[in-house]
Structure formats: C-alpha cells, structure tokens
Length: 534
Image (cartoon, rainbow, N blue to C red; front, top):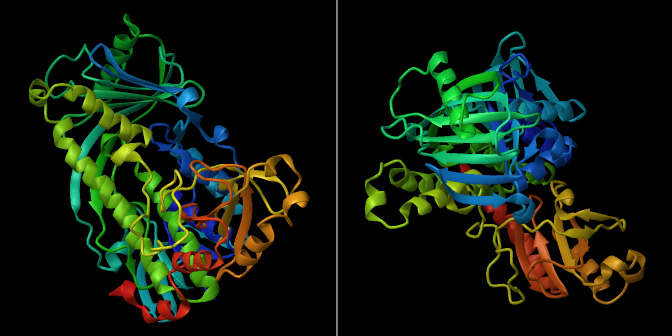
C-alpha cells in the first residue's frame, strides 16, 4: 500500500504525519521550503485543552516546556475591569506559545519516525487521481513523481492542492487587521492575559479600538492593536509609538524599560472551502478554512482537522476503502468551522459598530465583553471545540443509551483510567492509536489491583463484548466519570469524541454503536464508494 502524501510542512501537516505514523501508516511530507524554521515571536498560537493535549501526546514534550499556561484573564473597558478569570480556580488555562516552537517540536518528533519522509524544496504542480491511488508531481531541486494512496493538502490559504482540484474558497478578505509587537517587559499582570477595549489614553475615533496583551515564557509578551479598516501602512515609527504609549498607560507614568523583539501585521480572513474531499484528495487547516477574528484561533481548528482525519485514513489504509467514514471528515469538520465563522460574522457588526448600540441596549458593553472573552478563551459559539452530534457516525435509537455530562459527539472528559496493564493514566493518553475505547465506570476499582477485579462482576462479559467488536478496541476502567452512574459503559472514538454511553453491558448496542462509528458495515461502505468525489 502506498503512503499518504501530505502537501505542506506547517503544524497541521506535521501533526497529520505524526498521527498517521502512530497508527502505522507511512506518509511523505512535501515541504515547499528549505526545511528551516524561522523564529518569529510575533507569530504565536493559543492552544486549548484538547489541542494542547494532542501536541503533548504527539511530540512527547510536556506542554509546560512548549509554552506558557496563562494564570488568568482580565478584560477592561476604559478604566473599568469587566471580567476576571483565575485559571488556578477555573482550570482549562489556554497554552500560549510561539509557532516556531511548536513547529520545531513537531519536526523533532518527526525525525524519529521511521514511517515519515520529509522532502524539502518540493513544490507541487500536478495531481492525478485513479481508483487505486494518487500520483503527484513536484518541481524543484528534488522534483519527481510521487505515488500515494491518498493526498492531503495542508498547504495554507493559497493552497495549490485546492486550486488543482478546482475547489472554490469563498469568504471575506481582511476582516480584521492587527499591528503586532513581541517585547520583553514587566507588566502589572504577571502571566495574565489582558483584553483592553477603548483604553483611556485613546478616547475617540476608529483608532480607539482594543489592545490584547498575552504572556509568553521568559517575560515576553505579544501585544496586538486592532487597526481601523483600510490598508494604511503600519510603519516602524507607528508601532514604537503604540508600544510606548500603551506601556505608559498601563503602568500609570513614564514608559517603563522594554526590549522590542519582533513586529508584524496580522490580517484575518474568513473563508471556507466548498469541498474538503475530492475522491482521494482532502484539505485540512488553512487550505480548507480561514478564521481568526474576535480572538478565535484558526490553528486550533486545523489541528482538530488532522486529528479527525488521521484515524479515518488509517482505518481505510489498513482495511480498505470506507467511503462513508472518509466522507464524514468533511461532514463533521466543515460543519464545526462553518458554525464558528457564522458566529463570528454575526458578532462582528455588534462589536465593531461603534458606540451607538451601547447607548440603546442596556448592558450591551458587558455582553460584548462576554463574546470577546469566549473567542479568546475557547468558549461558547466563538471558541469552544465543536461536538459531532449530527454526524453520520452517530448511532441512533439505542435502547440502552443513557445521558452523561458529555453530550454524544463531544470530546470525552479526561478522567483517570486503569489501562489493561494495570497502570493509571489519563484517558487522553490512550487516544490516537487507531483503536476504539470502551470505558467502564466502576467505583472502587482504583483502590484494588487490577488482578482482583478483572475477572469479577460484569468484567468478563464486557471483555467478551469488546473482543467481538468490528474493530480493535481497548477496555479501560475509571472510578468515576462526570454524570455517569456506576456500571455505565462509554464508547469513545480514536480521536476522543464520545460515541455513546450505555447502562451496563449491552453487547448488541455496543456492537451497533461501534459499527456506526466506523461508517457502517463494509457492504454499506462499498455501496457508497465514490460519494466523496461527486
């Protein structure tokens, strides 16, 4: 079987290659550049709980070594504090890191993978599809033909893969622009991010805007200034003036000492590809979508694309075409991103429309702050990870299904579990291996060695049901799960999304749910062959 061809060696492409390798699927990563990672502290990413855990699992590097978990969040309007969040109490602190640090960690992990080939100086110019695979041609010093089982375009907003497949990419250009500076300084809010709207030293006009300060390791901060609409040139002199004015305003006096490390202009576009699959060719990350207004993070969604697609490609690679399963990638992921884009586009006129609305709608300023906070902190319709509740992989009408705190299709809670070897691990550590996970909620098992309860009670019957499933599955046990009664059995996909929760051992329901989560029985999958390319 030919490897998967991945076009693009940014974080999304590298993540997909690593995720496939963990499931014993070889890949070739085609990098248009020379393979060097440019250090840019003004180009950073914010990862939330699920994507930070994914990066730690794939790179083998603790997330605390990659970036900084914010201690808290504060939002202000003029001189008034609108909201404060203490992550030591609330948990789920975002992880802020420079993108080159993330890319470097992924490349280091990739260098140890025997199943991944990273080819530099290779620019794609041709894709040819056949029923049995994909052929791609690259030009450059290593230009040649490549043969693959599937091809995934992770090659950014100007995606060559998308253009070669004649896939439209409609949307809005330059939705927002921000001037950006990375600097080392002592600010009054150590390790706490700040959103400051209408700062008092900028009292009127379109430049009043908002400023975001987000801490990085080693006393470095990224500052973003929302720019007025238009294409006015952001000069170095303008940026330095903004830095000095902002630092003086926050410290209440003269500009404190600072070291300017990097600058830039960040332009946000909102676009969504019409199709994410064309036969054996897929799109992921910025090649499939652009978002990022109101504090939302596009890379978060790109990493979720890779996580969603990897286990589906792996199953098809090992066991033959599963067309319904492969089609579900577009169905699930495009719906989530479309929902976030829709929420941002609906919120933008309210948040950027000036002061008129605030004088008409009582409390609207606080409501605006809540929307922005959701975007920055990965919550609500602007920022929360999506759930695949309406997925074609979601089982329907199971007699034994019971509710838990995790809705079907959402990411399962990261509870402590007992693995088959008797060790205690977190649930997320067992993800990404290509296997389904069956989780039994059994209070008291955490205080006894596994050998004492593995053959007792309902365990033998459940173990037999797991062995009979249509795909490999790992049986884990947890003392508790949010909202679950004792002896609840949860079925979790390889990417960590909950399929269903059942009351006790129900082999028929468990088998049916697993079969649906895999795209249906083989005969059904083959009957749908080619649906993704229509």
